[in-house]
Image (cartoon, rainbow, N blue to C red):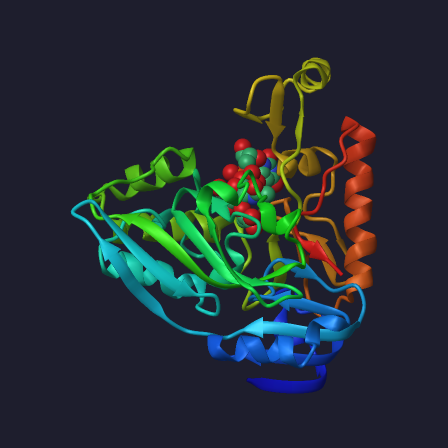
Length: 336
Ligand code: EPU
């Protein structure tokens, strides 16, 4: 394991916020995990991060930041139809998706281009283009805090929902995720329901293959989302709000253009990006913080914005949306 003191977190978060932490530990091998418990790291403040692609530091962190840098993508079982792959928490999500595409395993191709590490993917149940990672997660492995006892949670016990899991509720801060086991399909199978993807594939007039679908997804993504290697951001900053149908019926009278996504009975999901756009905040920039001009759900750091500046700005966006629609949009990004 590698240990750093008074470490800048700027290279550890895609927002590019220059906060610091007292200590940072990089776990390079799963066998090192018991040492964290023996050294009583969890007796004072700690924070477990993956690729730092879904967080905003609004202040320095007076504690230990723990990052998994473990590697390994291993086939553990196989039938004619399916394959089960176990992946170390520290693997880049992008490398796992490439592995699946190369081996003709179906299920994660729509999730291509999402930044971050495999260990984080179950936490907020990452999703894009009509697929959520819960659709392919079989089991999650890790260690309980503070006991260090290993655990295995089956898919059905993870309480997956839109941008949600047990790791964001009852197990928040109470476990380390060390590996994820995925169940993928060996039989040709695609999810082509997102309108933008259908149109992109039609324009290309190409054969439907894993490589072509993932390539089309990347084109659709890049049209709307910033390249985090050039502009600091954490992807969608807010969750799409789910409201009562009765509230939607009232809103519809004044805003008939509102886009909705199907939900369980009695509820309606709206597009936060559209609400922000209608509130007049799309493309607005204040100093080095702004709402991304191509996708209003994304807040960007154009240079040297501080976490506090981003916080003041996102609260302004929330206020504008609340004033216009009476809806409080909630960050999907973790805020410290
Ligand atoms: N819209 C606007 N203005 C905008 C942005 C969006 O009117 O500035 C409208 C669009 O026209 C569209 C609707 O809102 O009709 C939905 O937009 P989009 O398809 O771009 O998706 P989203 O709901 O804004 C979600 C995910 C994204 C994911 C896309 C594609 C959340 C919080 N975000 O965004 O995930 O890539 O769907 O499936 O659910 C992420 O989580 O970081 C992320 C990028």
